[in-house]
Image (cartoon, rainbow, N blue to C red; front, side):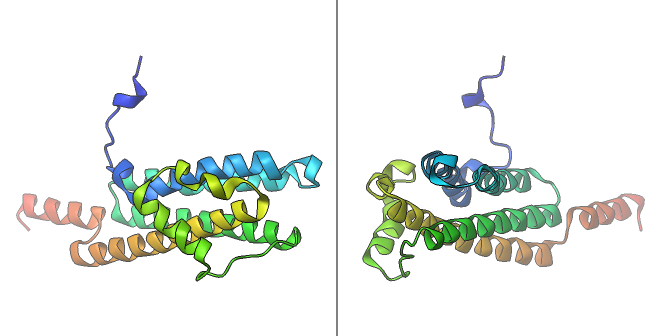
Length: 183
């Protein structure tokens, strides 16, 4: 039997802030959807499923990308994660807009407080006070997703720069093969 807590993190993804925040986003999206995206609230189960799948896809593509030997595939999968979180962000904006709730501006004191909370506690416990109603919960998620998207954009830029400097997996294997053969 495999002890899941002792499995190695081959890609080092569990140490990435983008992964840690993706876990929080996934967990909070699950909670949000169970609370606000039900037939009782005139919401579609399709939207519920889409939001859960987008949050899961974002998280899982970070994992899959970090485990890839190919830098090109890592860049691609990180881009897929970014796209999934962009889609999820749109779902939260739709929820707030169609529910006639405010979308807080990025300089709102509550948004600044959310952004700073994560520096001290990288878990969903840091956001308990923002989960009491739909408006604050939706805006919490928009803020976390904006942070996540920014971090993923930075990660993609860094991976692209590394690819330009070092080349890709296939390219480096071919170079080693040529060296081995004496060409």
